[in-house]
Length: 435
Image (cartoon, rainbow, N blue to C red; front, side):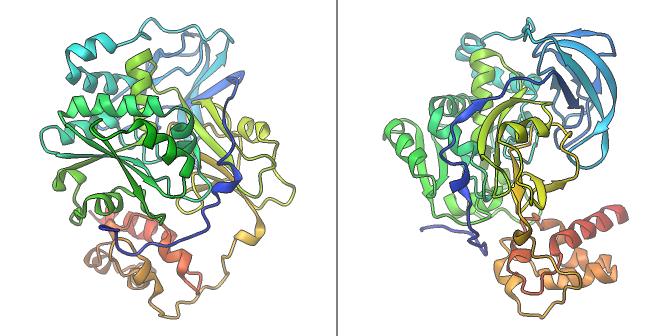
């Protein structure tokens, strides 16, 4: 490859479990639980109360800061409660509970915006802001903030379809089944940013998606397909930029610092749905997979759907399943209650088996240095770990702990099975508290 990134690993991608499973629309549940915090940034403020009648797509929680994204009702019905409910992060978060009336009565705001965007492409920024679109690859950074940070500063737009985490195939299935919608979203964003070309980056372990895209992305169309050698964590923003362009985002910097902007393929799909149909961010494709799931599948479901409904639709869990993870096995979070809802950033629900848990009770560092070689951010995980254990906050800062992207490469290659990622999460919290 002409360009690549530092470090990285090659875990079993596990795509075989669900890659051939088409996207199946999941009927909306009788009740949805919609947290007011589904994005990076300030939580939203509810604008409805118990007993209110709401329509599908109606604004139900407004933003309280610039880095935030509004929340909309994913079904029509009656507000049953506005109260703290269990969130996928393991805590109770203020949520809006809606009893579904089964009618999906659309809000008056849901309409096509094609004509106005043809006249003024820059109107997309306000549309995306009001539509509550965030990074759908799991990061959930408000998309309008990203667009604002790149206006007039970028010369390269990259669409992230790497989907490098094992097992997850939601983006892959969208690219195979609905490529025109993704391409449509890319074009809207290109016009918004006044860019003549965009790069659609896909890892090479998605041959069917690549073949379909090659038929549509002909030379001169303005969108260039870039096939990447499969490697984790290539889907991370900074690593993807380096792989595609050779540019390196400086420590503590943003993609705009090297004139780049990155959007997830699923996010582009959402942008197209918003522009063409007026549909805000109220649904997403979720992969339910892993060796602990009876019938791995990909579902199109509404935000607020309980995870238990997806697991049930996938045939349930195997009796000896060890752990349920939301997101990928490398960066996802284990959950202890399947009543938690699907939120905007939920791209996968995984069932993992006991033989996949390699944790040790008393891990010991043998100072082999494998973690240093694997780190895509050029950090020194073994020294960061030692500093965090000793509570040396100044040393954590000197070693640039805030640059850690928590990808898990170091923990994956560690023969001593140190709980490195958890230590770095704790270390970053200590640094933040000090500041």
